[in-house]
Image (cartoon, rainbow, N blue to C red):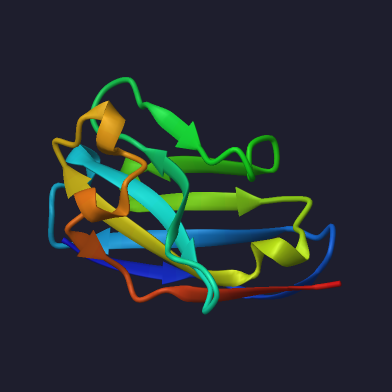
Length: 126
C-alpha cells in the first residue's frame, strides 16, 4: 500500500487543521493507520491510530487527547486527523503509517508499521 499525507501548514496557537492520509494499492479497510510526528529534537512519537476491519480501535497519545480526533473513510481510502486547540509544541512533521494484522499493543509503536507516507509539516506559531 502507498500512503500520501497532506494538509499541513502554518497555523496560530489555538487554531485547527485537518491532516489527511490517502492510501492506494492495497486493501485499505484491513489496514491499521497511525499518525506519528517528529521534530529535529525528538525521536518520532506516536500521535493517534485507528485499526482496520470491524469495530475500530482508536488510541491517542496523552498529549493530544481531547484535542485531536482520528477517523477513517474506507470508501475514500482516507484516514483524517482533525487537530484542534493547536499548541506550539505540536509543531512537527506528521507522518501516516499503515500495516495489517497489528495487535492492539503494537498499534502505538512506529516500528510495527511497514508502510509510511512522506510526511507533512505542521507549524504552530505562538
